Length: 635
Ligand code: G6P
Image 1: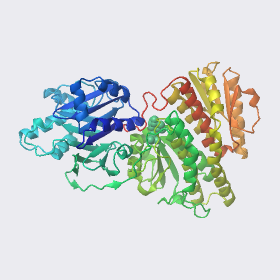
Image 2 (image 1 turned 90 degrees about the horizontal axis):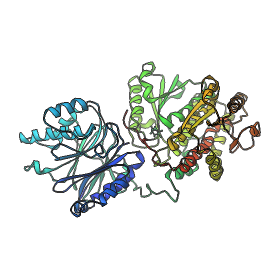
Image 3 (image 1 turned 180 degrees about the vertical axis):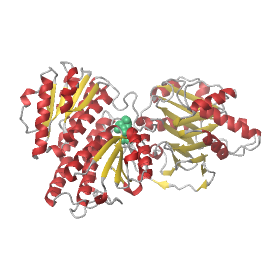
């Protein structure tokens, strides 16, 4: 979703650094981009489309304009993911006030923007775009002019007045043309920042300072980071950083020194980040297993959560997208190991559930980014209802980590650049197995033998997954057969309903084909009506040594064959040595032998490849699919 980058220094490198910063924000998903530079005047350059399009249009500017780009020492940049108004040059950020004296970039949503816009139009301000952000530019302009006229202008006072009028979420970077305030004693080249429920960090350099939506963007330029807390403002110049909270209290900046992330944008020889990230999965899973804090039966601890799991009566998992799918696995695992009820709820639907929650409930938020607005809001509601909170996230120091504190498990998958989740998803699955093991042992729900068996199975997963990566060509051949279809059905039951949902989502996200997942028993209650030779059915059926789960396997096969009789091209995803009914399918994709209970991680891999190769075959933008955002920071 929208990304912000800002630079102020003394060397004329603002344009280059802003464009570089914007490129490292591309992974968040965007549809347009732009920069504003502060020289003697303010100049804005922005475009619908990719950053490459922005660069192309910058290269066609007049010599005079190019000179401005080459001389700039201060500027702000933005990648936009449309919320108010279609993706267009005009709606792209930065936005200026009617007088062209202020430029603003914004991440978030201003809920009361229509009311403010009417007020400002009445005061004589004009608007060019459909965005809520242009309202911020004009409102700030109005507040500023008023304070200057009274001789009272001060950056923090103006920002406090601004935020007192804004309802919603906003990370802001604002540039001011000082010619309208000739008496100002402030450094002319400075950037005003505000953070309210949207991410923003400051990067501290030598005679230069930065700001961006994520620390990885800033870490390309410097290793000193200041994490703005919610409801804080900052004013940065090349050699000053002043911070105040929304009440006007001065905040002492705390600088963290982090490792520079030079390899962030390196595809390491892979054609796409998605392919690189698929291939990183064995390493991530091995790392997770090696980081288990205590792997004894008596005291198993993934990490030392400050929660008495023996007292928990019910678990609610809240998440969105792939994280939501992963949480379905926790439901099956805990149901099977400890008969503990688990409800998995889409975070944006949690509103209607939180009144049911009490003190003996545990609410687990699962989020790759740790910044998903719906998940944050749901966790906040659960917290006020008195529930205990636990988070599984891939991003340390994210909003969700801040909310859940020590009860946060950080999956060590590192930043995912590709918008569609792969390694973060499988690391969430592994986290669910390990968390379930901690809960089950704390509740004394499983025997030592079963515990040993579970750990053994989990430890084989990275090795088997590594072997599977060599089968990419086998999955590619399958994908080529199916690239022309527009509708797909994914079927499974039990724990692999998770896999069916994730497989369908990957295919939709990457190839834009329609794909739906159903528990296979549901097929005949409706979806069967759409089946014909144009609708392939992909059935995930993994045998089990446990009788209850073997029955699940048999039922999936039975349902898959029902689909086949309706002429649907049929694909079976099963294990290497399974020969049961396989000759009846048009195509069989295989994973190494593994029991159904531990199969979702492995079974996901062929479906990641299938989606990847189909998308590639169709020439789609694999790493940045249209309309999608990696981190959805608005409700
Ligand atoms: C977006 C992304 C998905 C992701 C979902 C939840 O929709 O495109 O890939 O699964 O958000 O994100 P989270 O960061 O909370 O896991």
